[in-house]
Image 1 (tube, rainbow over the protein chains, first blue to last red):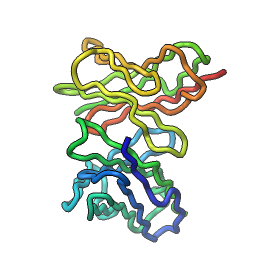
Image 2 (cartoon, each protein chain N blue to C red):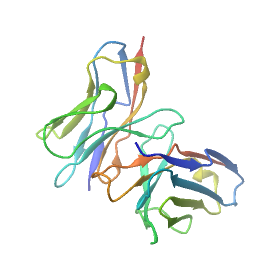
Image 3 (cartoon, one colour):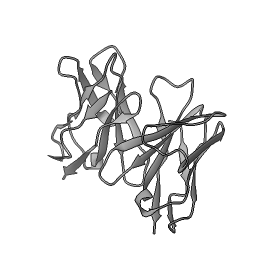
Length: 117
Length: 108
């Protein structure tokens, strides 16, 4: 299957600072990338969908000014958590898909553990 | 609104025994259903999907799932569990609505 990477795998930051998480499709061009948030022992919550070259579509309840998503190329999307607070601590997962993939086919990155102190 | 329910937080089975991880769904229109597995420190991996066709879907690692329209269920099954199957399993519907996950523990 296709490979999606995330960087960093874990990050600790101080409250009030911003942190950027990268999601890369390594062996295919991802027309669409998804960002999820996963709380301990809970399901994945879709935060936003980003298409290359256009603004991300955020799910209801997700603050677009806090979670900045950029999908500048077909292989890279970034999630920036701005002015992070302890409640933003979570496991962030991206996934990627392409137009030529079959319906619903998406590949997930390994996730990024964010801890805000 | 669409939703997915996994009624069991935890499923424990002995190695060699059959396993079932349950999933029920609620969608309007055609249900496009997926199962994923999540191992620690690794990304979710696709197991199988139901789009249309045969109700019994075969997937990766010997897993299969049965689509039951009347019961709105899509249970994941495997005839003989392995210790290495121990992981967190998610049922999902398109687009990107996931169940809460079921932790499968297979004991030797």
